[in-house]
Image (cartoon, rainbow, N blue to C red):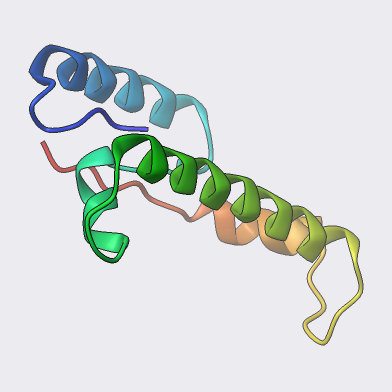
Length: 94
């Protein structure tokens, strides 16, 4: 998770870490904390926003895993998912 915009030093460290990770992995998902409040309706406490982000990441990983391991209308195996992920790019706004 990318630190909030007002956390300047932590954000710079995070950007350097993300760039380093991007060189070593096929796909990278970055959630910008500053954008979380835009996604959730109405005013929310920070703890609620971060809880929602954790649930989102967990559901994302669960759905990817289930897509690979369970038969469905769309037939996708690990090699098919891997070919999509290998073409993945990351977006990073500084």
